[in-house]
Image (tube, rainbow, N blue to C red; front, top):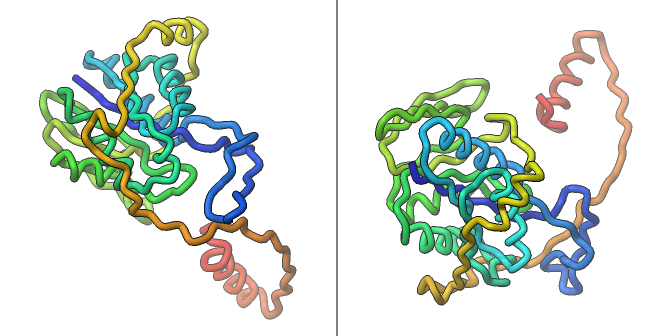
Length: 256
């Protein structure tokens, strides 16, 4: 079973975000980076499928030179090899350009299954996986909570709204976007880190793959949200208070 896992390098959650002078992008000086958390669940699921069914797991990314550390992390956790489509322009590229790079590299090799995280922790569009499936002409399913691989078929459990689930069956090859929490992510061991240095790592440029990095995305302005506190007193009977509080939690705070 040849599995590709698409991983993205994102800014670490505890980093101090600062905008550039134009206010259109984030300054990357002084930042720390990490693997996109939803992608780490996709990687773990790929490793578990490999342990159960055998095969090969390749971790692939499109990004600047620093994104190689994310591939190294995937190798340290158990991926067999890494593929890096390297270009600084992917820092600001949109989801189509990123998917195009991943598709061009994956299309060069046999693939039975492609896994991605449901979305990225930075932009959060949730588009790269489904665009990648379209470019490769593969059947796909999103928000996957469980995978049962049997023969050349995949039986998958999808999470829907309001606590509902759906079971779908897809032929291989296919692409799945993985929901966070599907499994418990493993840590890289010291031995895994040492082995990662000897594992195959292939780099491509967009020119090697015969593609460009089109500027489809036009960011007009980024801004940091303003934090504000406001106290509101609710009045009425006990029933009225409960109904008002429930409505605010559901429609304003959106925690229910």
